[in-house]
Length: 186
Image 1 (cartoon, rainbow, N blue to C red):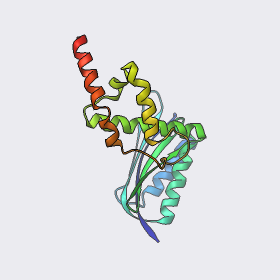
Image 2 (image 1 turned 90 degrees about the vertical axis):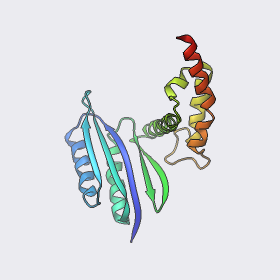
Image 3 (image 1 turned 90 degrees about the horizontal axis):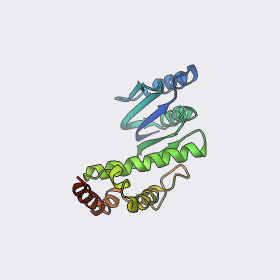
Image 4 (image 1 turned 135 degrees about the vertical axis):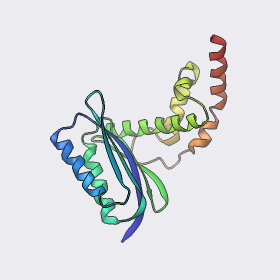
């Protein structure tokens, strides 16, 4: 039996040990079975490593999806801040959060939330970091981002989530206010 499946993730790992290398090798071995799947690893200046995994959507056997999930889960024990895996399964978009503890899964979810918020704000020409510099708005924005896709507890997107592009529109006036304040301060 097969299903249409695809996924992508970026995993930050500590300095590579033999155990981490074995987990990465296991993941690479599984990904060889998929057309156009890519796994790139890059060492950071601080000795840590980044793994970027891209598995384009295509027909995959259910056993492949299970094996891939297990290989990714194996890497979760090493990721100090956890990570998110965005996927498409039979046309449905989703995200799973991985980590060695509930706290690291929560960190992964919060990081994903802020990453999505920053991405959609950037598409509108709004910089999240600039918005967060407005003291009155900063706490409200942080709380709103948590509400958009949850607080970080759990392993899936909360059922009552907001659409990110709609969420961004609410902050256009704040960004314009910041630009006016910044322009008058120079």
